[in-house]
Image (cartoon, rainbow, N blue to C red; front, side, top):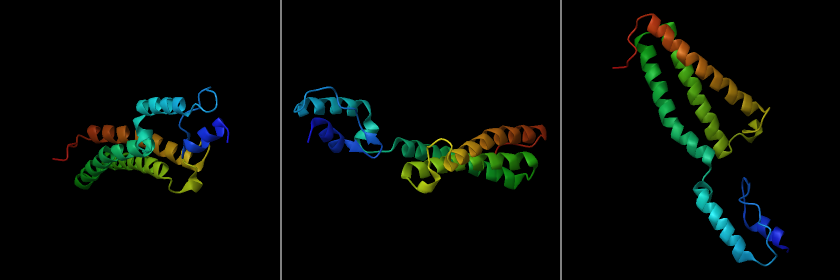
Length: 152
């Protein structure tokens, strides 16, 4: 086994090799290990085997859910067009976060998450555009109608 094969077999991970092997002569494994350790210190998420997409999505799930619950309460109190559009926008935000959770966990691989021009990419794009569009329009309409916007 040559040095390059050893590097690719030994240090490969799910997303590809962690680092490209340095141009070192064969047999200098300790220098390669030092280079790998230096890169792992720079990227702590890979060191622990965590998926950065999943971590970000789980962190964003809390505020997206809180926004959805607040919009749901607002819609239950004042059933008007503005609060309905806000609820739909918040639902689209939650959908975007759930799409990234599915991407991070590798669920529904036939959707080809993360690849351009795939069904998963367009579902994510459309829901993000709807969320960014519907939420401010709903807020503006609810404000224009003079309704109270707080949940308390």
